[in-house]
Length: 160
Image (tube, rainbow, N blue to C red; front, side, top):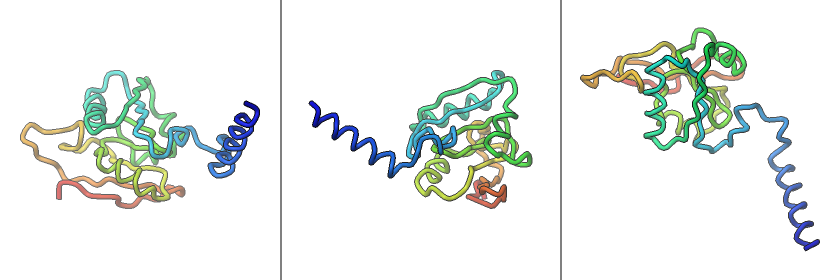
């Protein structure tokens, strides 16, 4: 039994050595990097946010929802530029996801792991997930990526 405890202790030390201290992680990165767990911060009365959450669930994500009267402090904490704001903010795998970002783009983010803070679709583009139109039309929109300095660039375009 002592030998087993020593092996467990050694394994724990190796894991700390290679993973780094947990205290160095941001709250968002505490959700494991390859995780399908998404934490969504949204207004309790927003219907399109509920539809976006359902889009994520239908795409295989496990979604935890936090209804908040004011999501702005969360956006600030995560570094979402005000010009990129939308109606809800999510955290997944150490990144923020702002607005109606398609699940496939979130999967790409988690697979490629670019050195960015997160993705954003500002506003509420018609035809984006959660904002679907009855005729299936999609207004062209861009999913932006935001780096650590707050610089915004294109991640992918939809509806072109």
